[in-house]
Amino acid sequence: MLGGFVTTSELALVVLSAFLHAIWSASIKGSRNPLGFNLLQLAPPVAAACLLPLWVPLGDVPRAVWWIAIGTGVSHGFYFYWLARALASGELSIVYPIARSAPAFLPLFAVLLLGESLSIRGALGIAVVVAGMWAVQADAGVVGWQRFRAPGAKFAWLTLLASIGYSLCDKAAMTRLNVAPWHSAIPPAVVYYMLLSVAGGVVFTPLALRHVPRAELAAVARSEWRNAFLAAAVSFASYGLILQALRSAPVSYVVAARQTSVLFAVAIGALRWRERPSRLRLLGALATVLGVALVAG
View 1 (cartoon, rainbow, N blue to C red):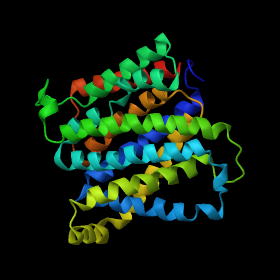
View 2 (cartoon, one colour):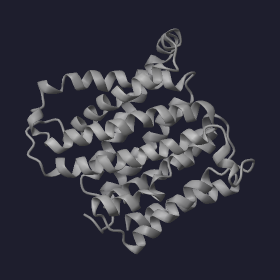
View 3 (cartoon, rainbow, N blue to C red):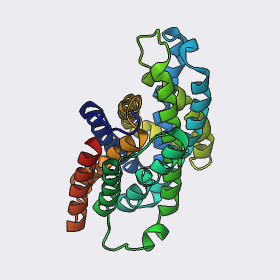
């Protein structure tokens, strides 16, 4: 599907993924050391990846996908690093809308690199999602260009750059896996997730260890290992749903619809940190829902 809308089932997968992503982001924000927390999250998928050859004929993975996995691993490694740095130093209401702004820029790359096309209604839906996403996280005390100079904003923009990179890589990989012969009961999306976790871990680990002393990492492991492993499971479920949707749905629409995670993040912030959404945030939430409806067609 290139120029069409996402189906109802694809939209359901993406919205559920968005909900899980908001929970995952909140767990990182709530950690005493987001970098150390992300290091702990890598352990389960990397360990599972070591067992893949027992159940998956790795020859079924197309050669191009191996190369794409390296590219997405680099993007994911820096994504984990920059997101953790952003959440450690900045407020969620400043960091999240910047880091999750990929749909504002992704269609340009998708059209040029993946040959996708955008219908007028789909483009309008994406634009409304982006507008709503920014409004829902607007902070009355930080306006205009001050948002980009706020603590964590620099890392949030770098996180955005990384998310565009891995979204393009993942769409290319899942397109190839969707037509490749497959002889394992384990879905291709699961296998690909394990591969990108290993590749991302190779990039992220040395970056994180530069800022996380061994004693601090041990302390985070003792007090937060259960939360970290649960977050890893949530991340796996969230990303697996996205990869499943990317097998057939256009990447521009999928990434735009996933921005409903901003809505869930607002709700989590209100319940967990007693944040009080302004009228502008509520209007932005409604705009995001409308945008998703337009994308779904």
